[in-house]
Length: 84
Image (cartoon, rainbow, N blue to C red; front, side):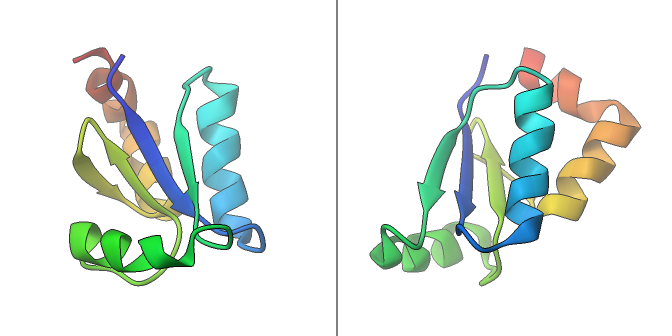
């Protein structure tokens, strides 16, 4: 299974929704908590071009935020991405 990375904060409800979807599907992920590591926000912005959380990457490919993750799941593409 490819690496899944999720940039998030503790207070973000969208981050919790994205984490729950991944967990419910049994997908392991690396959570990069910007509350604990605020210096990594610049890294997130450089990688994604976005300043909001969550930002999700699968195998280094930027998926987007929570709404993007749910759209990919609903289209059936999430399982395909994870099986590559």
